[in-house]
Length: 225
Length: 114
Image 1 (cartoon, each protein chain N blue to C red):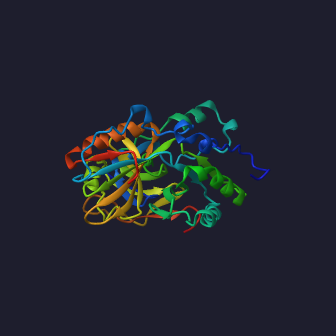
Image 2: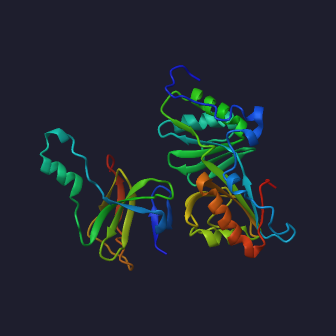
Image 3: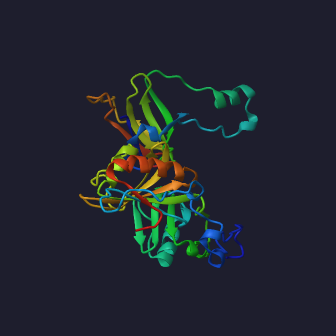
């Protein structure tokens, strides 16, 4: 940390390695509701697979005049530059999403989030904002041959692959909540979509998706496939 | 389906994602201390109630979260144009109205430039 920084930065996951994620400070937004249930149909004929990527490291990055400097710093640390309008860029476990003309969300392994925040702050002397939002959001993933059908029931946004192509990110309404919807992998036959969801809406959206996906044989699991 | 064009996302989105935020282009007085209470009250509380073409501030609340300007007809709900804050909208000459009622010859220009 540079000495002239007026920002107090706390490692919110400091004891993660010591005590493990279960005993640690950050747990899944579904934990209290004991979701996902053990039930769910068999994977063999599942048209939709729903998983939670629990406890991912998330950083909200904001910059206007220093966006280029932030982009360069991010490129040197994570290998990806800040994404252009409505797009995302991925490099291994790192993914940066465009949220607004001056805001992006970076996801990374939870163990690295504090180090990345420090590195970016040190690299940019000027006016930027970096906020650790790991505890405020969770990531749900919807995949399979009928994943798009479930989306069509849930959002007014046009999710056809011609419109929501691979890597595209949109903030939109979803059921009675708001999500950041990202097309991870899309082709004619099937799709894999990621929903960045407010933590307090996680159980609502999980139950919504279970119900919306029931007719396609939705299989819900807490483990990433 | 009522779609509104967000000038920041550069896409048409559902009306559901937006909120209206009142009359646009209200310059904040440069020297509030020297104003009378009446003038200050007018600035804070009094808005035009135009029938016809009206300039409004809207926010893409569920999307990018940015405020932008809308030129809208308060009688027919027709949206003529949307443009970023800080831009000005000018009608190039006599209003040229298209088949759906949209004004075709609006263009946005930066305040400083052109």
